[in-house]
Length: 274
Image (tube, rainbow, N blue to C red):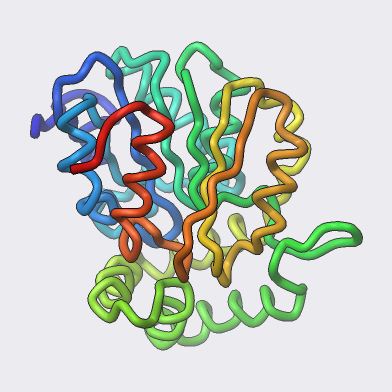
């Protein structure tokens, strides 16, 4: 794996693996870091050049001063600008972007701004809005989101243990602990505004602007994103899209159902899983 030594790629711990003709970008979600891709990275890098990195909020980013900006990153627009800057810096275009959770919509926004950078979007457990409204089940009521924000603010480390066991398949204790470790490494003063950004976001209007081909991947039992959200996104996205369901629990198939995920990715991208 090659470490990259210039610009934004260095503070975001960007790394390229593999040497295929096509580039796959793996972008983690809230509370994670690039290690959430460790189970699928070895196989993908046999067929593709694969970019992994840590978002500026991640605990894996050691020097966060000046990187995570509560104003700039109070919406997904700021992260989309970071993504575009990173891809431009590395001279990458026409990439396959795999965005988990919040990164799915970040990729959508970036693709609207710069469609030349993206050949395909793969949206893994993504959601344009977590808050329920008339005619739309986002998965959370206002009181539930208020409780999440309050718990992060009053007892972050207590909240981490509970949240990790809810969003990761609880039958996979190692994966639960792996994600909890990522969450614990994120600074509470970063986690709080970021949680507000994520859980109170509304990017439904972005979907009808997305023309890049999309595959929406959803587990059958995700406590964070109801199955109906995947089908809602499919209906609203302007470009060609499809939904792939994985028979699995939790919000992290790359951790707890990685073989099923690789099988789906193989069907999309045209490689065989051994």
